[in-house]
Image (cartoon, rainbow, N blue to C red; front, side, top):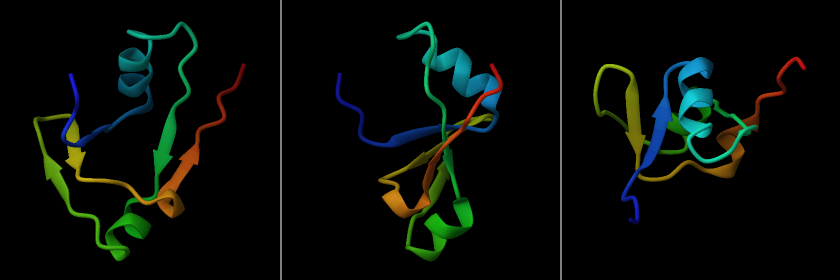
Length: 68
């Protein structure tokens, strides 16, 4: 299955749970939404906790460093 949109979770807990469907230790990425919007990204609400975007520029992406 090929996705048409980038799927974004609202919480770290939700993103981690989704990531654990594929990997025991998922990497959670953060999105600087203000930066993304300033670069033209439009966010769409998919449901109560999921957002979609056509793409996210690398300048708006970070890696969440979890406490071990």
